[in-house]
Image (tube, rainbow, N blue to C red):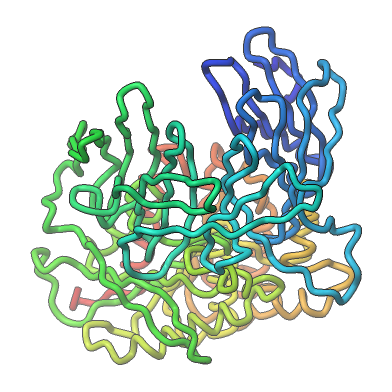
Length: 538
């Protein structure tokens, strides 16, 4: 579409209207701390600039005529300001943003408290904007931004008719037709979708029926959903801990019709682990959500199981029963090989409210670390587990936490696997793309202003105490945690006489995506833990 105009930059299509041949694109140039947004005519390929910002300038909603766009700047997670921007400029003519809601960072008074807004998905109506927000509910709800009033206010919206139980968050809002919308919830890691009616005058949303969360569409993760107004059908892609993504149609009558029957070739369903809730109380009494995956009984393993702690990335992320994600096939491979896999969502994780997630801001390696240490003590009470044979692994931030735990609590671990985790927080921050630095200076720490804190929280400060073998895995083209970061770790620890294996994928970035690489990666990880955690008992 763009030729070489955005060569070497990250280009994301945020919204697209195929009936109008219009789309909104977000551009991350990587080299300067500025994110650009464009309205693109897909027929003649003209671009209308919709503003720039070092804080995102992310499109949340567009009006029915595609003449105005709602944009969001996010300083840290949950701290968001809204802008409106008209789209009537010419190609190359920059449109001006106007403040819609919130106090921009540059206009804030030091020491004053500013409520977190937590804005998410939004839909532009005739007289205002319906949007997800944490202003009235820490676990997110609906708010309404009337556009006719002079003062920018957001009013609470009442939601009725929900039937799920458990803890979670409202994560998505989409328009169906007329007054009908659907809401998506993440409840204890599994997806629920409700269709309902939006009564704008009463500021009420009433659920009419459940689309996902029951029957065939229970205990899994929604990968994608689309409503077709001409038929009234929903099409969904849905995955669980033990099944690849399947395609379903949900008829207007509520009937769910499976369109695919994908399965794991060569494995019986009873050989896979569904996992069990293993939530626990941390060192300060905080409830921490976790799941424990044990080898299936049909596999015939006996005795206490060696344990692998699997720590997700982010830190603002969540481990869910989702076979399409990198971790779940690996978790299943580990259980098939006789390991128990402990999968916690410690503080800082998404899915449990904004306040829970915000606890990790400017506290990497603090309370989150202690949650893992508390989990180790908690699991000693489980007679099914051999807590003298425990390994730890994680990716990205999970790799950082793996390095932190291995260095600060070396007595707990017999093996560790770090996948592209930050080793030295100073070099990590310095090597980030320019567009990422603004956020990380606020959410993690500033190299000059927070020097002592970053020294104390860097794994490099503590890893001389490493007491177990370690496997380090890295993509050579990683733009976030560059290969040199992992190479520094490997070379330093090897010089200290530590047992370090290093696996570099020359054609991967901040992930392992290619099939042949993923197979190699899974096999190396499982073989590494088998070598260092197993005995004749397994």
